[in-house]
Image (cartoon, rainbow, N blue to C red):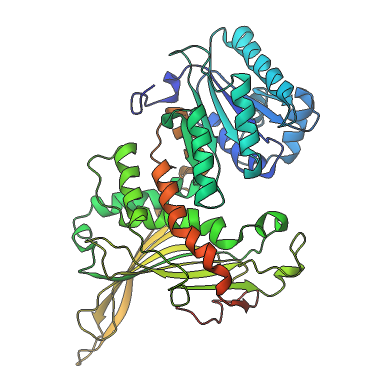
Length: 473
């Protein structure tokens, strides 16, 4: 099925969503609630089934009871009958991820749904809601069992959703991509970075290209620097075993931060389809100036909050960073000379994901105009400008124009990122998913930093710091 040929879910034939690792945190917090929301909005195919696949023992009935208790359902939003009807479309298939028999049983269960309930071949959408260490095992078993092959030629498609982190460095990312490439065509693979699906991040393209006031200024002739921040109040929240093996740079730097950078500075695509948008995002990542052992000390800072090594699952001698700041450049004609600051950290004083664009101060009085794009929370666009103070002199003062989504749109009207991810995967629209080239160039930039990371001192900061008191760039 070609992208762009389907515009509404009602046109889609029966579809089965297979969630590998359905009893895990991601499925309970994000995937299943998103599917419930799409169901109540009538944005799922008319005939659908959700098959949970995991290691724990459940009957279908027991699993539905489990979901009633564990799934993050906003019970004040949904009618009890809608929740009931949705859960009736959920079934469970037990199996170990490394057992070939488990996948043979899963295949039989899917065929049974097709034959007895749908009476036709259905679409299959697999979601790997598991730790990345399981990817290779699951993908191999899916292939051996024939589950990666559409059951009815043109009648039913098969697609796969893969969560970040996509690989651990450029070598492992390429290995995983090669494995996926042997099992699926590129149009079947949906690599998730849910930041692309956030409403405020999507709005960047509309804001730029729909307002002639700004697009002519979107270059090195008018912009001095750009600051991209992803700051969190929370620490690692019980994810010590996972987080300690990757750190902040791999966790959000390689994915969310670079996603925001690519979306912000990409050239206007030839057309606004998935192929051209992803091509332009990849070109941004391809042109980021490398950071290596030779320039890392003047280009990066890494730090860890005090008390991190006392967290469950964290090594007492851990040198894993919970905060980083990177200074880099994009070696292209449009952005040459513009400084980009990429920053993220945990256990800070605020939750904020924001892009701040500092325009050149033509007056040379240190009074730049600043355009701020707030991604979350409280999605907003703010512009700082300067006006004359009332009186007889010519002194100026800063003022702010702002637009807040919440002032014009009810919160429930803004889809959750995972709703959009799943909706677009159903439609076959890959615009909000990362391409092979984007993955390759992101890791090509990040891997040399990781290789040189230990040459940098690991600084410390107190939990709840407004900004770490570090030797910042």
